[in-house]
Image (cartoon, rainbow, N blue to C red; front, side):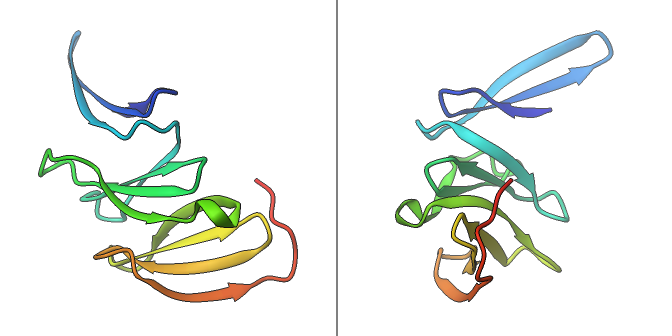
Length: 119
């Protein structure tokens, strides 16, 4: 079980029978608004409400890697663009849908919906 607290810490609970173990996986020092697993569960997107997206790979047990920072564009949400784990899509409050490479955070494309977006 992965979860995050308001302080930006990604925590893993390994639960087996009536016992559990707690592991701190990453500290990004920003409140995490959502956690999204890739379709094959090899990557986890950590999305902050400030518009920063990090990638965490549970099997590698390393630090979370900052992929993109959309803080200037009223960021609302992000998710993996399937099939595969190579791209993510984000949306801004103003209705701009953006596609990003997860390899290096490169901006690839955008589409303006022409309407305000709400959660």
